[in-house]
Image 1 (cartoon, rainbow, N blue to C red):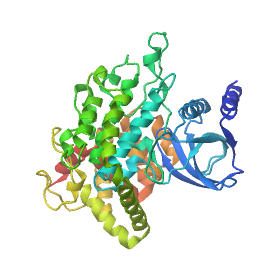
Image 2: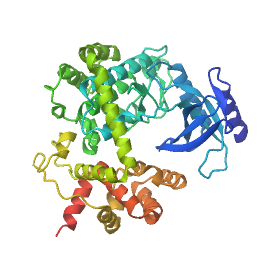
Image 3: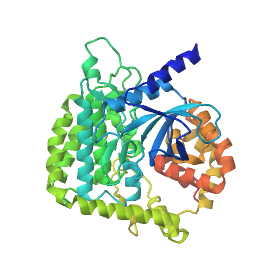
Image 4: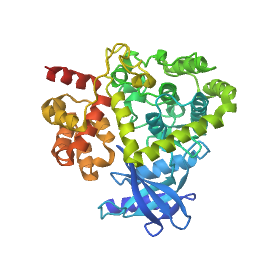
Length: 459
């Protein structure tokens, strides 16, 4: 019965009038390019089409969920949404012998908005930052004005992909659903909540919450903050969102460009504590269009400037001599730890590269990978007991975690159990490099915990 049900769901997926069915006979040169809580994304070359595609597959091989996501993306087809080419059934590389199903989508070699912000020392050049904010508003407005409206429910920098000219496209529709604001009088319910805590509105933490369009608008406000600061919301602030805590708007120097103050005001309206006080995406477009139009003449130069930076970064990573310089810069950046809640998120990326104190925090000598690994070994018990952002840290390790280990970790309910599995597998066998990467994950997601353990171990 189960096999028959799975077959029927796959048949629905492959019979879509707009979806082409592809298998291993036409996909070659597979490479794993990303993995998250949902599953994995691969790069592959479609040998008949002679261009590259991406293949998204779930860890659970749930064809029904893939069908839902593919259908939502096909419904939302536009220049601001990642294109779906078809569906996949086959045996991907990586040791599995079971047939898997997936969605075949556009391959965006420039990565995501998140990866762009990680590479740049601060926010993108203002013309590009304003265009990104405007294109996201255009894409989200398209979803919200469909009939019936479609919610994204997981809008964040890692789900915004960039094409060759750094235009933004919405991706990852695994949590999308028809707007509850349309269904609220019909007696229908919306099911699971989903989403990512940093971009989740305060009202969504209530058990009885039913998602509506203001959910996406809140997330958009946080994404604007990330674009304008080039930073990620600190975990402490994210945990206090239900109490009204937000990233500090002061992190954006509004005097640096014309229209910045307008975008900051829009950002604050979008993350308003009261959902009904948030603007629609149509309202957002009136602001973003006005701001971008003032800087549109400079967009080509801004894009070329960033593309040059990205190409240079790629060459540096491939050249061991230049890579030493890059590693030293990243190491200095990672030494700034959080302070009290009121100020930890007001640091700007560009300040991290200055010599001396940053807002009263003294930069210490960067730890070597060997020192980081030793720290991870020596503090095993404390780390296992105290870490609260286990999956976020584990996902930072990327391909270092074997798929089977990742599935085992994901199946554990408690953070302590997840970290215990990681210690007994990946950290046990991975050596210095993996332990150092785990330490870096602690710095990103658990800065206060790391600072506390450092103080305890200091003479």
